[in-house]
Length: 280
Image (tube, rainbow, N blue to C red; front, top):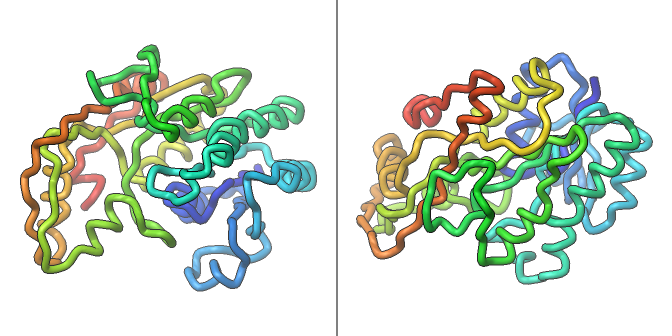
């Protein structure tokens, strides 16, 4: 089976590449935005299986790749996230986050391929928490709105809402890499910002499980972990690093975007691992 990871350089994508390449007997391919020379430094990619200089704004290049490669499964990890400068370009954000996934599904439908697309807890505004798949998305910003627009829940497509934490190869703008970059300083830990994410490694294990054991799973599902505050999460990570970071309990910002993953658990027997097991 040919599995194509779109955005194999990103936080989710590169972990999927590593895990599936090691665990799976399938043929793993990926697309990245820069050229091969840049990504060769990381030592995880195979040149013949990596398609470089691919930009989601140019769907024709992806369509040509799909036609040439004919993958049975496409994992769409491409997205303009909250801390990316591209987010300031509204039209590009709408195209990449909101329209591009539907173009992929259009090709998959015509060619009997499977799309697994990744969405986010940020489709919700965080006012209530413990959202399920029937909860009405309530995002106020362009990121959350465009991610909701891009959710593909028809045909045999599968959209997974899953907030994640994990290492990054480049950019290093998300929570874990930002925190690991802090040394001999004080940072704010948001004790009233509730999060129910999972690690990119745990997510990769679930994607492998879906592909191998639940290939007909389709529609919209949440994959999440136990609820935890951002303060407690950083405090836990801080115990195992020696960066001399003082985490200040900051309670002025209140948000709860936690997700209920019971629908996914019922379908796959998923049991959310503890944060200790995921991180350490």
